[in-house]
Length: 566
Image (cartoon, rainbow, N blue to C red):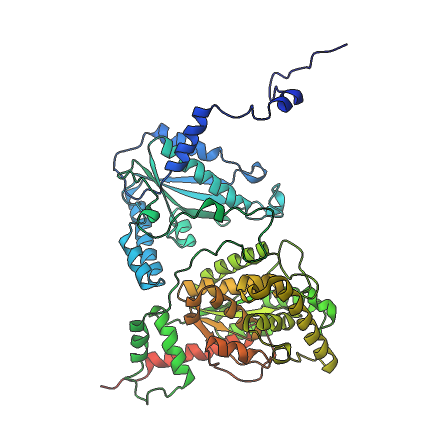
């Protein structure tokens, strides 16, 4: 006997048989689909606006579209602060104007002029500003889906912005997304509490332009990549077929800035170059931004390394956590040195999401973890740059083996020239380290070939979490025009990786010391850096970087306070 299927009065009324018979039946009609793709293709970043008011119900409708965006764990973390007051919009526009000029100073000359030619925001003209904020006060572990991908709340808010953009475009409104703000300043402008972060400012109003193509594409800034260049089947290619990295236009200081910095010491009541390497370093620091730093931050990154299972270190891996805890408490050697130098301390653990390899048998990191850790480091570097000098330190039992392997890959050196004895190691341990590095290189070169000399590939095959994050710190600080003071071999290798990714970062580097590690001089020579200290240090943690920073800050003060001649 056949019975009728009970059909619910709410929810999904379809049956499995119906869905199997017509798996495409959930699609909209062709006209609706065409309309959707028309709106998507016509979305533009609008910079010029009419002053005409936007009806409140239309504003609410657009924000409702944002509120219907997908969110991890249905957390709905977005908050929309609407700003109509002219005084607030003018203050926001002033910040954006300032940051536009600052960013222009970091670019190559041609790109700098193109940037200054562009109108990048319509904050003053648009009648409404919408500051999109992400409420992150709930711990990630307490939201379904965030325990593993902690930033999915921010991604959810980005989806809300896209919904707002599309709904506005469909209604004939223009939206411009402005991110030319230090996040803390924008948050302070609209009174965001701790734990609520901004994603930028949306200009909302009737457009005073109707661009047929994206503005930056129309102005020759860039072109849309072919779709086939961004689609990857199954997994990231391992044989040279990977998409190219996005271009960087980070520039070194101009010749005029370099000469001006040098000239600032020519009229001192002393012989030119009387401070030797310090004078040359002061000149380079002043050329970066024209400002004299008076303080700074020690950024210490810690990580574990599975390579220690091959008995390449004289200390247990537990030491990494202990020194990190001591750094956070202000009692490690590096933290005390930072305090004596007047530097604040930022200490973070670099932890990849996927399992790490031991270099010898498997890759150290997944490429996605490399990119994520570099991105996190960039953020830390930008934040640290706001306080002046950025000093680097690291904590990681086993990371001198990792550093040696990376130097071999990046500079085509041999383990005999890169692997050092290490603290408290003996001859047998040195032989094991060299054998591990040699085996790791053999494995990685067989798999990657010449691509092993590329920074991202080297980090994935032979690197470690702190190396990736420190690479990002260098890039983030350099982009803000902050001097980056290196410590020992590990931080110098991170700088070498950063320069490989963005050559303009080289101008920001200061070699704090020449350490006892055998490969360190190879790296400093490749970077063209002469160290400020050569005291045979074996300590990591940023100790030498802090001492060098103290010396550099003193030299900068001497340059300012010494008498002048006519």
